[in-house]
Length: 147
Image 1 (cartoon, one colour):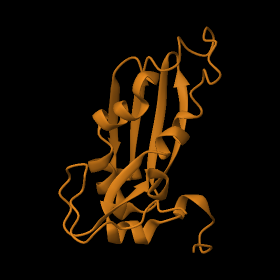
Image 2 (tube, rainbow, N blue to C red; image 1 turned 90 degrees about the vertical axis):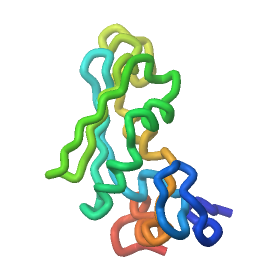
Image 3 (cartoon, rainbow, N blue to C red; image 1 turned 135 degrees about the vertical axis):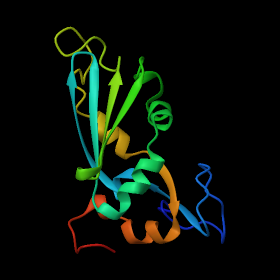
Image 4 (tube, one colour; image 1 turned 120 degrees about the horizontal axis):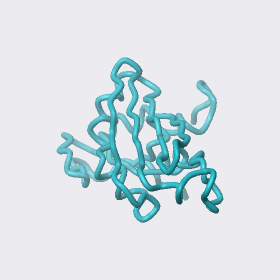
């Protein structure tokens, strides 16, 4: 049974420490945003774009440099940088030291960093329950075909 995104107990505090009021639920980032990724040398570039502009402030709060770095773990040897693009309701991350030297020298399967966006969209985040209900399944099926 898929319980991802199911609300927790009433007034459950957000485990991520964001202090949301009321009930919270865990969802995957793919329910809030879509993403694109690529490379420049040994640096993977991941852009995360909110589906809905009202979720951009939540993305800004949830997707910290520290959380993104922790999500990728040893896959990212260097630092992670974040750039905000409020006019696009997007965040851009540079993952330094993530590509084994880059596309022309690396023996990695994904030396151009194309799957980093998909990997980041699998990150689980804690959000207010009403947000989870509104966005559940959005990144997995065409609009209007939800459960």
